[in-house]
Picture (cartoon, rainbow, N blue to C red):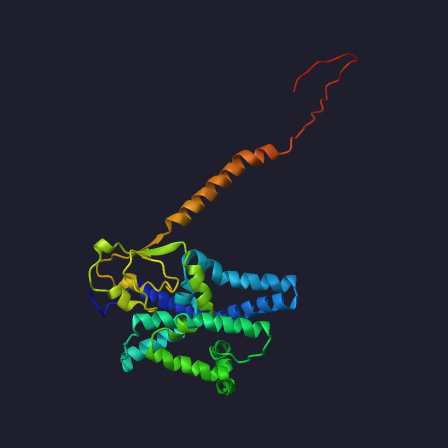
Length: 298
């Protein structure tokens, strides 16, 4: 396998990341703010149908695909993730830092993002103003107009963003792995995703290239990649010299979808006709009749 050859999927992913960065750089911040608005609406009881629909639609844009197909948002569309990928590539080519944390330490630190999410929930419930958070500052400076004023870097969010950027030079996808509050939710949803990566162990060698190439430092020694931490970047598939890793739909989901389809067909074929109203038609003849009794059938 030529290590210098760029896999087509890598090119496709980076192109999508660039387009997403240019067109929807603030989607991460918007999704988190939608979650905040929903929590605030529930706590304060200030329900607005129009606002509720907007919030639900925005959350569904990222959460339903995650539930079905995994964390493609994180791997392909999140501009915050794209920034980390860029910084890590710069680091690999300049600083050449490629050390990984011990697996036990990495697994333990991944629970920190749940603490971050819980902390945000508390802040939202108490309605504490935390203006200029790091993802809002990031979204601001992804547009050229945002650079007219650099004062946002002097806020706590700005300092946190700079710290995340420095950490991203030292460890790959450090924010996604350890700190991302949305990543905590997505990891829970992705556990039941429709597509899973299948890697038959009996056909696997001892190179461990797939695990070593994983941006989220997931142990890929099992036959199925079931971890909700997977961001669907496909690097494990690209790195496998035996082409032993494939994305396949989950059999349980396929079974459920098949049962639902059969039930739907049964409903359409049997239930609906019994509920269909009888249509009576009256035909008026233009023929003249004389007085008398007539017998017919219909």
